[in-house]
Length: 421
Image 1 (cartoon, rainbow, N blue to C red):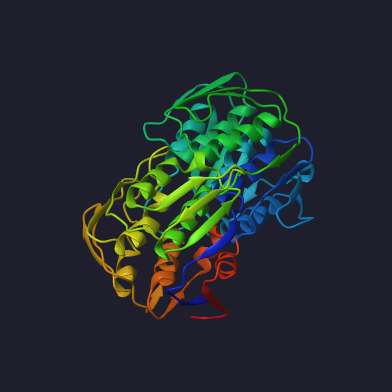
Image 2: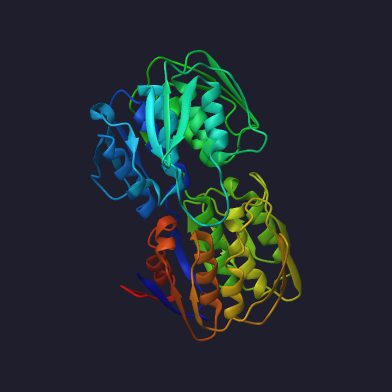
């Protein structure tokens, strides 16, 4: 397995281009199952998770081409299998997003129960209950979801807790269902909105995406399309913090500031200077004195759980006492012991971590445990005095496109060592 060797203490300077959103691309690629002809997608990040979902689609019989970096062309017309196998689905939770489209278009699906980052229980029961209410016959057998239907029908779906994947799966299924589906308690994330825009470009009738109630009027067929994926808001937030934690000065090209309002507000509160440029990019300066912060993760548009580990790293080198409370996942503090190894002063108290600021991290050997925890360790290493070795960076390769190359272009001293333990 690859690892990073990082020599910290270098302020990041220059411009960085923000990649397309992995979490938007995954469901949008799955939605190509619904199309009657070729779909072309651009601004797709080159990531392990993207490779996995295209392998899943290819296993179904779909023809996948990648004419250029960032472009994927999918022809769904040769789809002849309805099984997403364990060997692929085990590594990525988003693979469950083929379930709704397969049921809607082909009336049957066999999908392995999904895997992904070990950050807590993320059951798919809300997906399954909603599809059952729409007319699917679903059974769990030998680790697979076995689903059949004589035809999905529109209905009223109520999610007691907003679920991004559940909202996406039902929105796709409802696009080819008979009648009208109303999703109440829908997730509001930009990735949900991007999927809705892609589906509407295919001919779907969707109203209310980005709000708590989404209405979908089913249609009989959907066409192919050409579509560009939104930029990755979590990469934006990560580079904002990278600038602050290294006392740097960066321009983030292609960022969507309206997708990271809660993150920007917290960073401004801490003392990082962020300004909007006329070309739509963000100018970030981290040379000011920082102030402690109190953060609670909540569903969008609140502060995202996917930025919790990164802002914790910044809080570690902020004078005073900060507190960070995780309200989304019950096992998302696995980075805390690794930040302590790097010299952070942190104490877990239930769902909250109390952070006492130190002057600077100290280089050490650490191990990444999940995608966003990996990012927090990279951020800490960029700040640290001396050398830091980060193992198991395959997590990073799932969610950040060429992160090491981007950091090096900004002046960071980052080396990828191939085949590290």
